[in-house]
Image (cartoon, rainbow, N blue to C red; front, side):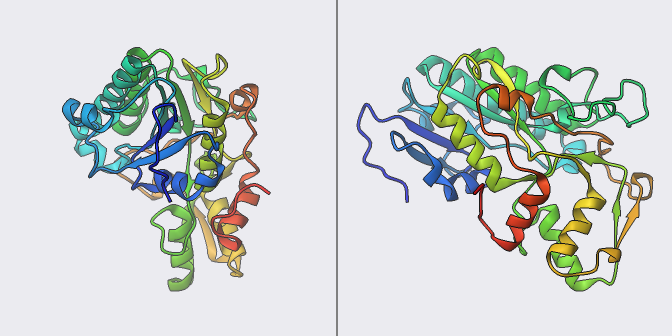
Length: 316
């Protein structure tokens, strides 16, 4: 429950995009929030981040010491290809308007971004990051993202930092909650296991599966640590540790629900065409997160187990 008994000296954490996957997880994990703050959810009904008047009204009480966590985004990767202007409004204009508010108020913006800002070149292609066992570092962005979604998210990062140089960008990847009814990859695999004899899943896209609950706990830890020099004006990566292909994640889901992993069949990206190209490589290194004094997120396989066996479970 949100404690609305706010005094002028009580810092408030505004969760923008509170109706989405990560925003919901932040609310569910609010017990991880520091005792010295209260939190206020802002859904799309409360704030239109693409409209300056709406942003100013929703954040009218914003003050120094407050925190804005922006989880709102245009995340339809395929849809963005045919709606670039819509993606730009949400992913670029929105963060810029939020950052202008936090800069004016002396508040702190934490803006959530994505692995799609990287080109995602093939493991054996030019400029490949595949020889890095720990994945991309925050400063490795070079070249153009392969999708409208990625391009707008990268532009949004830059717009936020330009408008508020004290902002913190947190990139994550392959986020899921894993519930049997969830629309994410893990939830989809759980449903397909019930309805299909076999499932074909691409085995040539490598990334960092991330349990939404662990990410939410990490963001609350970041909030609790405060806007220190180690985190302000910079980009951090927060994902569960390790790496996997979508095929490996799907096979692990089948194992977790007691099904035969042999029912998951590997396929290639070329055989599974989508309007927006998917990155062949988008593993994110967690070094920046640890270097900022924050707790590394656990291994992706342990997190997947928790998402199915102990829904809502976080680090022990």
